[in-house]
Amino acid sequence: MRVVIQRVTKASVTIDNKEISAIESGLLILVGIEKLDTQEDIDWLSNKIVNLRIFNDDQGVMNNSLLENKGDAIVVSQFTLHAATKKGNRPSYIKAARPEIAVSIYEAFVDALELKLGKKVGTGIFGADMKVELLNDGPVTILMDSKNKV
Image 1 (cartoon, helix red, strand yellow):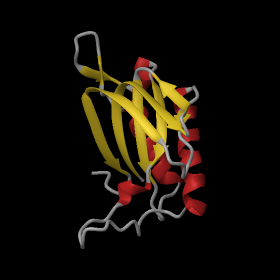
Image 2 (cartoon, rainbow, N blue to C red):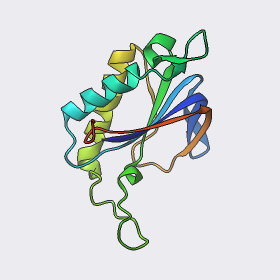
Image 3 (cartoon, rainbow, N blue to C red):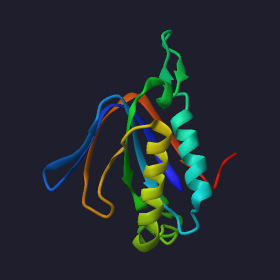
């Protein structure tokens, strides 16, 4: 699994001109699911994300986690995170999981985050044409890949 994590002051997902998810302070998480992803990937990434110390403490130092800040999260599926661009100009998405595999992994990832945060996590709709709006805070943007834990 590959994620782009953005610390935001607000974020929303709109489909067909209808806002379906919105948060204030927290994280917008774009997630790309690979064919070989398992529960181990879900567990590792969800633990890292909720405990990542990227929110400011009282002294303005990035020392607090999403859990400590009681922030919100939105998770948006984005298969293009697995784009291979080495050859030619047309990206290949051969490593991205097909929907029949990816949907259940995506849902399990959202469930894991909800369990760890103790609250509902906003989502997009898997495979839909979504408009994602955000106000990046910092800006703070972190890339993580469960296949590259070092």
